[in-house]
Image (cartoon, rainbow, N blue to C red; front, side, top):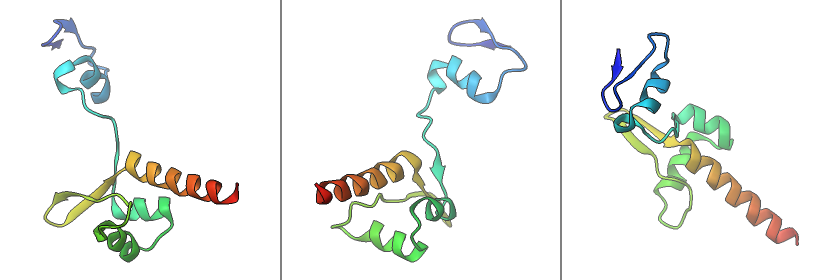
Length: 95
């Protein structure tokens, strides 16, 4: 098997992510999508609160990504950035 972009042989033992990394055309942001239950575990909020915050125009909580008619998720990096903002706000109040 060869990488079409570089004509470099691709090992049959390569993982899909390794093949994608070698294929410049398929290279994507490696940000994971967290489904609602995973997001809930990270932020420790109820799903109703997460969706309410995401819908609120004044909230900085990230908006979910619609994956299909009945599925959505959040970018992991956006969730952790939101948490870091909460930590920074807390630290500013203490100082």
